[in-house]
Length: 227
Image (cartoon, rainbow, N blue to C red; front, side, top):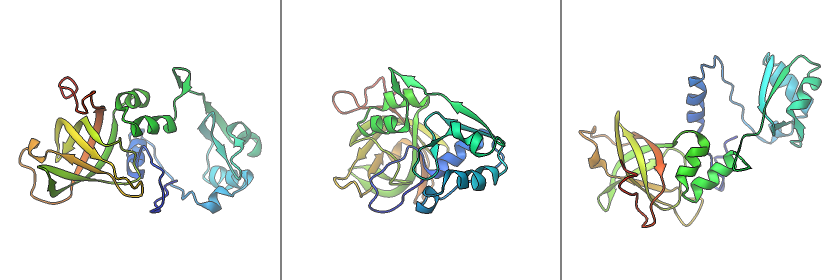
């Protein structure tokens, strides 16, 4: 479900494009994307199974231990086999904990939102990544990167040690974030365009940012973090 309304304050860890790319790396043959709207949320569990499980010819369904489906969001994966009259086999992915607390997207989003990038990366198992477009506009000598989606979670205002990729060049550098006072407005990202060599003189160059570390106690990435 992606709520793109201007009033939405919810943030995601990955954009739909990133989700598709990640699933593609798992060598999936077919990917279905469903619009999670009020009508979809109100489907009775049996209707959901008939239409989206049996209807898509699924034989095995893999879901997390806390996955629910159907109207009310109370029907669990354990009920799916019986509701499908045993036409579907289910596999439950058990809870994964860290420090006796469930690893969840909510927990990781919170860590990023308060600037604890290293801890978020540890729980993710990889460096958190966002994308955007590098434009010609500059402020205080730094170039602006417009995030691909204002709904993707960014850390609070400050400088961070990151790996930035532009035009097939990867540079370890400090990235500056400025969060607006109004959550409905997009954040702004700043990078040093001159750290890259011979970039094409075009606007809106695709940018990929892998967030590596939070700032040190002085608000800037340490020398070791930027190595």
